[in-house]
Image (cartoon, rainbow, N blue to C red; front, top):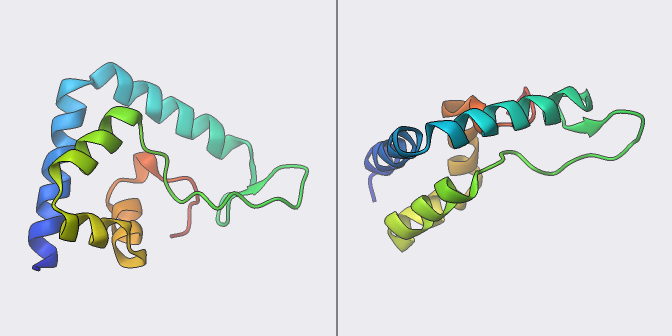
Length: 102
């Protein structure tokens, strides 16, 4: 499996999602911004006023998630769900990323 090809495939899917559902994409941007605003330490997703940490790295809208799941091969999904794939996605698409530091 060529990682660059997987990245290009994921980028194409995200681009298509944004083209098909621009309103939903705008809502996700606002939702993630609100969620980030509620964090005491945005580097590690610590919730304000608590010692709780969110373990969520990204927040996928339902349409995008199902587009990725349905269009990626099993091998591509394995990479996307891996630590390396998750970090790449979070850095490449900060709109969907909760902590500031990935």
